[in-house]
Length: 427
Image 1: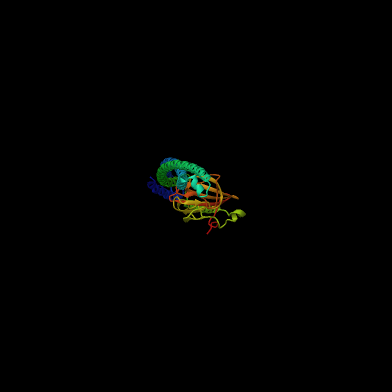
Image 2: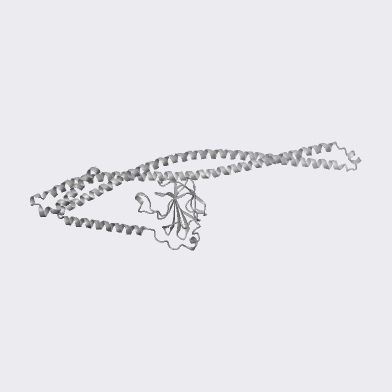
């Protein structure tokens, strides 16, 4: 309907502009119904056009509601993936602790076994000494110049030593039993952790599939909305042109000179509008940043790059497509999904949640009104109130928030206003 309509609008517009200029001076009174006939035709066309606009507006509203619903579902998916990644990380650390515990138990068991062998060897020696002592006759000891009581004392001493070694062996064997029991429980815990980890990995894969499906639906819906919005804007523009034309006929714009003056006025207004837009654009440029505090100024040129990757967009650079009027307010760093994101400087977590357009978002407060912003993460490893060191891992690279490619969006702000982080990062 739109392609069919445009030539019909431009045709009457051009014809009426030419005819009305000479209507009052040249045409007799009986020829004046022609503009009225044009007006009726254009009015019918405008009514039809308004019907189309209403239909498309309702459809756009439905799609925008659906877009909000998908964004909500996508937020839940990305938050769930973030929690799952955190759980898997914690499980991995627990498994590592269990393996270390098992390794310590194996070493201790080996040491205890050696001690048991040593004690058993000592018992054997004592038993042999006891046997040899029984073979000695008191008179033999006397004849050899010894004290016959030595045999009795030796017998008592060997008996005492044997009892002590028996007690030692009992203690070591009890320790072996305890080690075996702890090892059994630790192995059971390892098995349980492996099952939990597998279930969590399966859950993570399912969440990734759901996220992918929702991202596809979101992309398709955005394309459909963009197409419909473009059509809607064109129809609104056509309706505006029709309304202007009908208003012109109602006012009986009769002279070509008057039409030319109106055209010149419109051109002038358009030029003024462009100048106002240019001034407005200039006003939206980021203001100069006040001198930083001594604490933060000492970090100039020492801030860490939050992740490794390729800088795809820099501060102040124009965006592509429909958002060209909104320059980048930070750095867009393309990186591998799952790669570590670190704190550029020490600070406190003041925001750690999902936000539309930014996905899984984390914000650090560095004091003196300075903030650093980390957006589009796959997972958030820190919570609000956590203190972090410079270089500490706080998140992982992702494509949350509807991004097509994995990466990190990074900003620095002073009193809420973004400024160029490139000059503050270590070379």
